[in-house]
Image: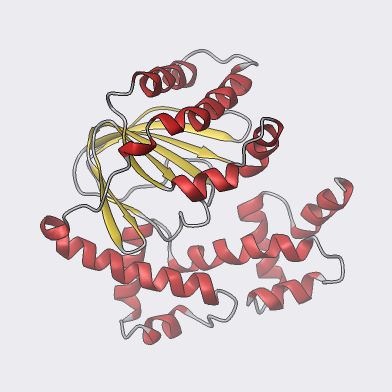
Length: 286
């Protein structure tokens, strides 16, 4: 069973609520590798972060740092009803700065799971998010949603003490072991995305068959290995594109692409514009 209750985008904030009893399905959100907030209404999931498992149960809210999201994966196995919020840094950071808040520092510091089911302020905020996301379209809804995200950050200090500790892994140990193996591979990709020649070489490095590695990596992350490598490469490419001394061919080579054409195709698929168009936009904004 997989049921989307609502889904929408609000100027860099994607909101979606889904019920499901399947471990792995198509991703609900709009963005790749952005900040996430997850709230569990019913059921449970398991949050795997830095080699440790945390249980996400009804009334928990989870803040996920985008610098760690692709390798601190969500795993499950039981029914759950979840609210997912994805936040683009480019959308929220300027507004946060105006109010003296640091978006990047917030998610880096508060990355984790919190039990907030009995916190009346948090419940009020969740109710307002639900009302906006499931209600009629309004040109002011994006502004309202951003204000609710700011309120979440400001009020967070009221439930900081509810951070959840390590979950007893014994009941899900076989599943956790698989997550740890994938976590190791994901960490390796993050550090070596520009020099990985092929999936076969990656599998050999970890003494696994290519077929087995591809299967468990997709199960755990919902990315194929190639998609995951490209995610890191395209993220790194943005910094190169800001520096005019690098040609497109040089950037492609530095990222580990043998073909400029393939780099351009992957970049456009992820960013919706070509690398050259992206560079021109950056230069205009200076």
